[in-house]
Image: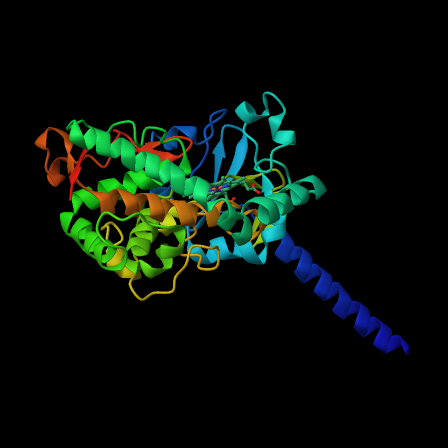
Length: 368
Ligand code: HEM
């Protein structure tokens, strides 16, 4: 190599180094509201953080940063960025952010939901996937769930004969499955034409009053549309379960600093008017003939999350939720307590462990 080549090569290398460093140094935190000392932006969350953060994202964009107390929190509010975080850069975003309340008794060190991605977590996930939620295992214990659904219908029959209000049916609404059922029933009671339409489907495919098996669900497309629409509008975990980054991570033009909490606002992704037509209206028909599914491939609808930390219980949930809802609707007609009409039904949400109805649904079953 002659002298000139060496000098020219060195200059090129320096220019390359300089531009790369300059690029890195301009990388910064995603935009967000300025933080107060100590509390950061906590005062902006209010009682319904999923809604407050969705409206802040309109101002600051789909990758936004806030300080919740001392915790740097990154909020993702669009399906394309969610895809980047949960799929393309899944590895970097797959740890869990563990709230102090959960750390109390060290349970998080043994729990599949809180462990970081590590050999112990992989073993637990494998056990769940193979021994609990695999199609074979779920088929093998289907009769147990079927028995429970029959007990539920028998209880409703008793209430029906005595004209009693059913108010403890959905009360365990901290649970993802029950809150989904409660919202589905509430939305259906609000629009009686949807109730009629699904009952017609059930009568045609299953037969009025007959019990529904899990294998029947694939033949009940409108019932499935109702479940999808319920999970779009009322995802039980509106921010998924918070993720955490263990290292500084580059995300598009930003740096997500090590230790940040990452929330994916699936509630607001489900209301994105650039993708959904009339997103605030409960309209199961929007899914008619659509192959959009909820198993973590279509990022516009990810109530179970996506990527390696996707909810392992979704195969069970997708069997049991339609069977229970379909059985309730195929066995009874339903009305609100105290002769309330659909317009009186209160759809207020309460943010907690899950996104529950603020006022539990109180309904009366009567025979079809
Ligand atoms: C409608 C019903 C359900 C919904 C909407 C739901 C939703 C979710 C969501 C959003 C996550 C976090 C996913 C992520 O971070 O990407 C999750 C995690 C989890 N879910 Fe579910 N879930 C449901 C039912 C169930 C059921 C029935 C079970 C078990 C019986 C279950 C067990 C779990 C576990 C163990 C995790 C933690 C997984 C991990 O961190 O590796 N879920 N679920």
